[in-house]
Image 1 (cartoon, helix red, strand yellow):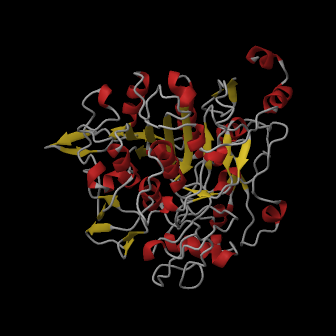
Image 2 (cartoon, helix red, strand yellow):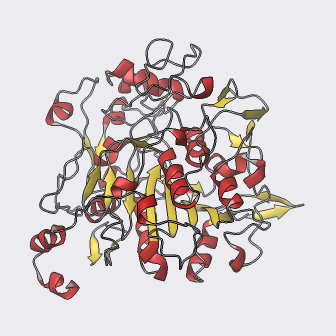
Length: 513
């Protein structure tokens, strides 16, 4: 069949591929039982790889999907026949936007942009009580000479790989940052659904009433600087440990560049496409280092390749190279979180979509070659929006009424839309925040499918909990209690598909299928 498809014109091939590609999703519970993480227990998903990138709103990458401009000299993108259209930028939003400026297309020559303002309060102000018309005034970056850039977007000629992954796999157009704000709250929500319970060493305006609303480094990390925060409670790593499941966080630059008197330094760096040298490791992007129970303060290496994913001196916190050591020795953990070195994480200001594409494609190409690929799911998600424009007012599932920092509706952040006025009565966790990309890449993912289920970053926790932990939740006040399910992006009834896709990491185009 694969040889037959290669002989067909590309458009006809796409049509053949789409025939029978949709199927009703079933819950993980009905698809299998007895989840242990063992490679031989018959589970559909035995290995989850979460690639957690930086600072992209949905409209910034997918606003005009599946229609690309296709100018001469840039990688071309042409959608499969019947490709669904997400909730994106309409002609009215493109040409008569309620903000001060209309969104404009950025091309590959504009991959390096200034960083936008993505503060907890300023993102609320940008949405202006639901009108979504104040982005230029409130989330344009202080260092941006052209404030209108906050409205702008890339299309399939620059984020080509992501658009091609959407063609072959599944994505959501209704997934949100769990709370308003920048990286640290997003990273903490990814692993615990909880940003309250912080103890600060030093002085920081980024913790209010014990809740983290901004960026500060983790207490349990030699490579931290300035004021730091330590989190109480538990995270998904603690739950996986209790269930004797293998897992790890793997981050570029985590391996020390030097160790002096037992104290690690993190000084490795790479050069991005703009020619700037960027330090690989960013401490506040490593959420497990905020928890004493799951930290590796001195960045110790695993005691052996066989122990990667198990509890030893590394305590489940690793350099990205350790992930590939484990993968290439058939020792892939049940749950892996991957964090690119900074120059490839997609964060405006020091990274970009072209360097990010290189990381994503090389990672996924390599995963698809592994024997474990048949039972692997890759989730691509982001920590926050960077303040980039997105036209969808997020549903407020958790209110906050702190006049010192909340500003969606005057001096508050509401009104609540799901009946949970304030989870546990904890303020300063208003959400959902800005809409973010969420993609599932797997032989078990539906093809060319857009899921409209309301989800957020903690939906990833819920997937782990439902797949391996008998639906245990982090705590009564964590967002995973109200998170939507990701199972609508999978087809557990008819999968896995025998897909052998390779993309070009430079252009993002299909190089092999």
